[in-house]
Amino acid sequence: MTPFARRRRQIMATMRNTRNDVRADDGYALMQMQLHQDMETLHNILSNEQKAVVKRQILPHYDEWVKGVLEGDSGLQDDVLMRVMVWRIDAGLYSEALDIAAYALRHHLNTPDGFGRSVAALVADEISEQALIRMKNGEDIPAALLSRVREMTDSADLFDAVRARLYKALGYALRNEGQLQEARAVLYRALELHDGVGVKTDLKALDKQLAAH
Image (cartoon, rainbow, N blue to C red):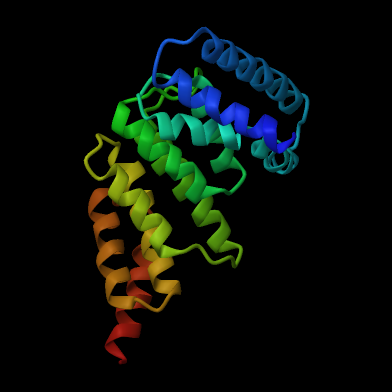
């Protein structure tokens, strides 16, 4: 896509979110067509790992649209935007996904069809689950990222098990960064929320480590 085309896409998104404009509506329809084509491509891929690779390749095509929508800030339901949020999570682009999530939470937008969860529940559940898997595999996940998720979803009505898993992920990230006292407090909160969250052994080890200092 040329720089001119990218800029035009951003302007069309901003226009759609600031006034009733036929050209802007046409732009949204074109983005929906693009989204449908990309969803068809992804539907034909069996491997979730390969799907994530393809999503990272196609997501830049939506960047200018997302930028325009966020700048327009009218809060109109935008299925393209919400699908991009999900894809960014799937692709491991968590900070970029949270930029959309913050907008969606502020304007009470709905998640895409088929998800059956609120934006807060989807973001907390998916990001914490992926973070736990990646940390188990030896990757570092910034505690600041998970703290942002916690702050964004703190007032939302979530299942206790979902919130507990988020606290578990945050606690592990804090522990990995050497913030042991903070990690202990967060992990105990996870245990309070859900006894089966799976942190008891780690808490014992953490208590022992703190007692030795």
